[in-house]
View 1 (cartoon, rainbow, N blue to C red):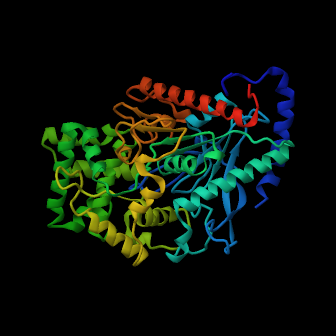
View 2: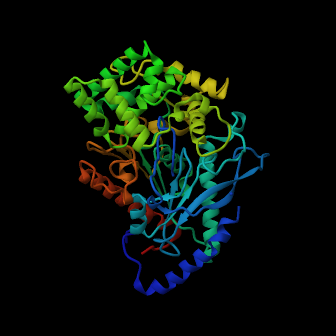
Length: 500
């Protein structure tokens, strides 16, 4: 019998209701036992949500996490925030879905397609905030020295420790000894963590979804802009490139006026300004809104209107306006701020970029979609300026440790959207026990399988009807369900249980 696709027998209804009420009543005890996603640097990998209705829950819980998992002498702890959602949980032996939070404050469990999967499989959902981000900061000051425990390796051990803590707590509450089957989920950097967790801790999860998972650390990520050009198409690409040329031309004579035109007068470093301009276009393709940038530019070009003015209007109305980007995100003065807060994610993610994964989105030598000022030197100067000497992304060591796109894992589903520039840092070729699915459509971008279209802001339950090809999304989702059903069922062999 396959794992989670049958309904709970009706005769269990009263028992389930009583147990659920008991769980709610005792949730406080669980949260007191010790220590998504909002704003994140747009130039990295976003995980944006909109209003409170986008969450299944926003009730915070805490437990004590180990600060340094690799030292036998450092026993310091910090409080780490997490969330739980039990409305669909088939007590006592339903699966537990762990949704990994990433490079930003984790403000609850978002109501995307994972909620649909939880309902289908009778699963509980838990979500752990990434160390240092949001309210899970070990230190009161984010100096470079205090960031030495911020890494993907420490984050993976956080997930392992939390998984054991939560399972033990659940067993105690339900008076049982057998573990529940777990399945891990993540999009983007959390997607990479999901894949890496299954690689490093295969005994702790039945499988993983690695959605738009950036598993390959890349020093000079020229493929990023090449994909933007392909996603834009010939006409829009030409308009974007001409716009960039005209902006640089005007910038050379009056940079103050140009920065003000785009609402970015506070960006004193020229590279910061041109990074901001490049990201403003990138975000439209990455998150399934290509027409928001292409339509006004192509129309302006065809009508002989001022392309710079047309792009400035798009940047201010959409990128800063409806998308909600804070220009300070690109300001290196802001990145130097060591006081923890909601905006600390910018500094924190750049530390991970500068110390571990790079993803330097540099201008290709030919056919570039961004200013040539955004080059390798710009990124290395930023790392040095913000964090000091000695912080350098050793991407070779990162890829040796995890395997990059040659990751030697099992029971990992990789998914990518066809228009997403980040897919070139993901595993796009299937291998035994690690299928890779590409969702192809005009507005299929970052995390389409869980988020639907467009990918920002969030669509409730990952609604895919606005995707240019909903069938392409549904097909990949069905393939995911089949793999989850198989792998969760195979977990029965280790416990001797029958879940249905």
